[in-house]
Length: 352
Image (cartoon, rainbow, N blue to C red; front, side, top):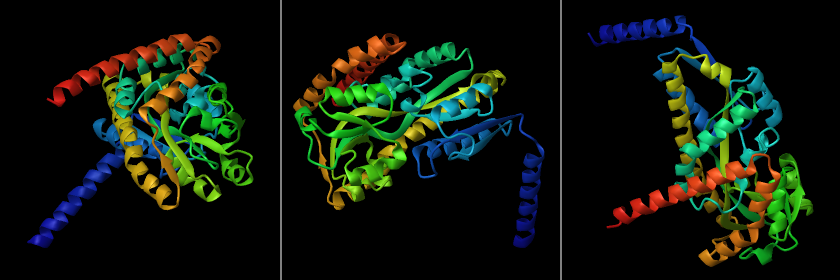
């Protein structure tokens, strides 16, 4: 009896699988991330794929291309999104700044104090404002779907000494990307910005070409930078490592409204996954860093205030020199103030 039942269930499962396979999806979304399967971006895409395919009852199929199969650099990948050869792409702010310079607002230091504030801001109208600007500036071709996280928070790390105050930054050669804003920040703090390609950074630490960087702990440990001499990390949390998820707008708008809702919900699930993933992964990364002899320093509130004060000129530089800078800066600071008020009000009720 049991064997007969098992055979019947197996046959039913095979028939169901055949029926799903026979039903071709109405839409296929080709999504790419220039990362690997250990990355937060991949975690987000897996959640997105699972949700969208299930919630659409197979009407949408999501194909994942992890690495550089479809494209390798921000401008190239975003061009692929614009012309429709790529449907979904994730970039850092630096990767998209050549086309949408105002996305560098996410790199402005010390504007968002913690995860709760950042997550509240990025799940609200600020992201819609940036979407509006990107659609306008791409001629309606590239749509910002959501902003998640890719690596936690940027902190200052170096090979030379513990950094407790801005004065400790004086003279250090800090690796930056080519974009203007991170270089302005490093200069404002008294250090020397040194643009170095990411693949060359390990060797650059070893040879002294650079002495520090602005990275999250999972990137530091994933790239084994302590083996190259990086032994000091200051948890100043100067910038939230935002992940911008772009989609070809024509593909999105070609779907009926019910499927567009599924896709939007899928990106909300993706966002939550990328918010959570760095928190878990950073626990082991910090433990491994300290176990290997690394010096981990948490600035006092007074020390952090001194860093913010030293970095303040960067805000004026951004508003004056970045196209759309003042518009997006005002949107972010207003969203932060609203999030802080909302969270503080909730905290007042929750602790009583």
